[in-house]
Length: 475
Ligand code: NDP
Image 1: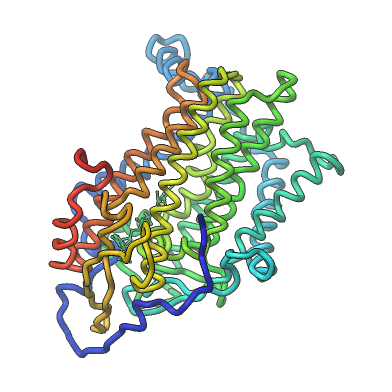
Image 2: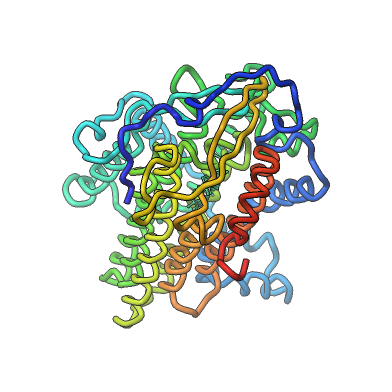
């Protein structure tokens, strides 16, 4: 797990063989250049409704004990008006604004002012300055990988406060949850709007900008590939990882503290959610260097989808299970708790091993062992924008021979485990598995579309060799 060794320069770049080939058929990979009506309709839908969806879920917990149906019933029967619900909604407060500003500033300071120290003493951990993947313009960005350090530092301070200093209550996040949501929205919109303006007027790498000509699509999916301020402040790495993902485990801890305060105990379901999601978050930071090669960082541009999504959608909707358990403290039977734990561990194992197999394969250029054997693969090539030809390989053995995205399958199993920990009384905690299924299925299709335009006929050979996406024999 997470056995990332010392980074070598990308193998793909070693095989770089410049050619003055001006073919354009293979060079327009990366995010779309043209917007079809379905993408535009989806973008407009999300821009209009995603903030409302977040509000609806959080309000349902605050005012309706996490029932998603009762607000609708109240509104449809005329029992309540929208204004009644709105008037009961906590508004932004100076206290929440102060907490949020301090929180984001603290994460910025940890990100840019504290070069990574963890890789110097943690065996197997890759931190410090690392290279990202080759961008469509042929640029290789450098990143300071210090997320694990930021996570540890933040959590040590959290526990020191909870058990020793008592400057603030560990329930502080839960107690200010809706006022904090308004602050997160302000940051999410501000950063997305800034990224759009920056893309037009002062992009970091103009060759890696994409303009579709459609304002809404560009706002949502981003113009700049890797917007930066200065040499090191990378928007995508910062907003993807912190403040959202560092906050994830703190939010869950705050929910556990609230359960303790309200009921005098923390239920085993809350512990399960904290442990399983904690492993997922820790895995993310342990493998932050690997994360540079995932779709979010090496294919997506930075727009509202990532900017607002990381500030609002992720911390508010990925933590619904813990929030639900504050209102409905579920104590699971031992057999159920063990079953859920096993499902979570198996899902995590598949998720991590599948990702690890691809990472190992790519880092060693196929000179490794997967399940004790030399990996099988398909040789492929692609072009960068300036016409340089690169060579790469697509693995067809290990978990990557079972399905083209078995890492997503493991992720979905883990996601289901978090939801099951909440029992079956309400559908709200199951939002996560429904959302992840849609997200990862859509991601499969989006990624494969991109890979087809990147690798052309080589990708078709690959899909013929590995015909299923998520579940062998089914899909
Ligand atoms: P992948 O790690 O599956 O990366 C896909 C890329 O890998 C492709 O674009 C291609 O890139 C390369 N690739 C595809 N097939 C092969 C192959 N057979 N051999 C070698 N390389 C291959 O996708 P993601 O970046 O989306 O996901 C990373 C992890 O993050 C997943 O486990 C996912 O579950 C998780 N995730 C979690 C989310 C959450 O919100 N919790 C959201 C999104 C992801 P190239 O161009 O380099 O060939």
